[in-house]
Image (cartoon, rainbow, N blue to C red; front, side, top):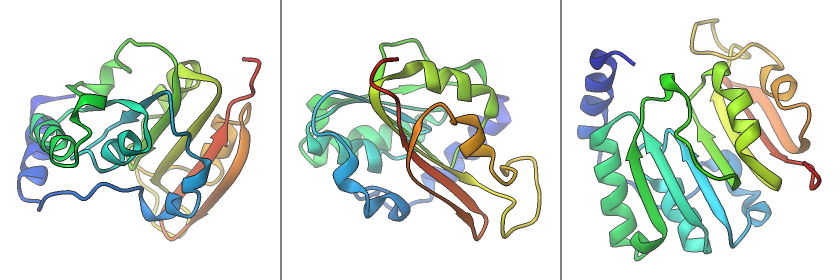
Length: 182
């Protein structure tokens, strides 16, 4: 990612109030589907709201984001909610791919879209693991380079068992579980 993009995200996060631990609203009604133990990967974690929530459930979490400002906010949120010992955050340029690491029992990717990462996300998901991904979509919004085409997530992750999915209002999302024998 170009340095200008990193700076743009730093500026965006610097102006935000502190995050509150929790799932994005569209996944909140499926909270019971998320495991209470294991390893989680939070892709484009921002200020760490999802990471802190997952750690609060008992998972060990790696959160990655391009913004050092967001990563510092995530560290502060994890510490202030008492889960800092179960969270690790790294600055990572996702244009270069996912950082190396073990398979994860949960992968969350909220409002970050890079179809080049879809195969890496699949290979990082542990057998029986849960994927929660939401992206901007052309469905109910104007087309654009950062928006998924209709059906993109379901097609890209067709090898997973869909728990729930939806498209509309400019967003697409998928909650799916890998097959236990991968």
